[in-house]
Image (cartoon, rainbow, N blue to C red; front, side):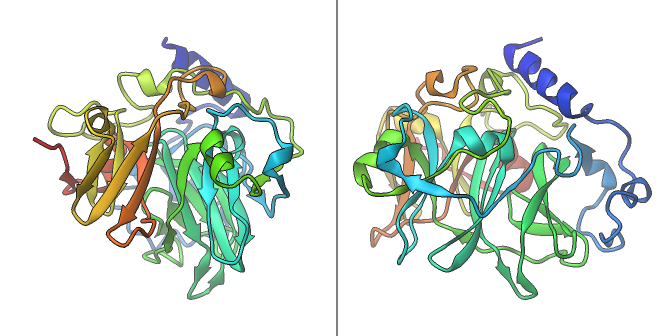
Length: 324
């Protein structure tokens, strides 16, 4: 078994067995009595798998506390999700917490947001929690679809696909969440730009924060619990790609050019961010760098830095920006 397989197996054995049981809405109904399984956009229930932990087995965080960035000592290479919203102090959400909780429900500058991270797809997306039926609060269902986290809202218990921000099961099926232009960067980059910014305080839970149960995962030959087609063009399944809409730029393109301007966006890459899915200690992960995406006017653009297999799974007709 690979290094990531050993670490992930240990984590999942502590929380539940991966893939236990078959896809069965009747069986799921005992744990999800409010979910309307008669309404769904999923073609086959077999697309949805048990990931190991059950409902709330990975506990989402609600309304976390924040402390001044200047009072916190993190390794400069540690990754954080940066949220900059007008009228509020910039906030950093360390991946050392997100990797164990996957969703943070928060309110910034009066906007209710959900900062989300799916380690198996390396997908970081921040959503606006406001919907036509009100402000939702999200949790981790313990289900996976195409290896991506399935979230649920606590109001209707509809199920949501994290990678696309859309409800796929339940009363809200078809509802889409607005995505906010946030990004992942190194702690050093955040504090250099925002020495007076805020950082999420360590949750009062018993977790080995700073370590990862996914050691070596982004060096694996194939994704965990994924049975779909591999990416086209010979792109390795676990290569990171920058996704903007339905386009994907392989991160390897930035080895030759630190800035790329194509399809109406300008993407810049800077070194200094550790992979959270490489070494057992996040700060010791290999350097994968940080990506910032802006439009022609210099405004930040919503994007994701996800694995290639996940882009292909959810955007099978997507455009691959492979360069010359």
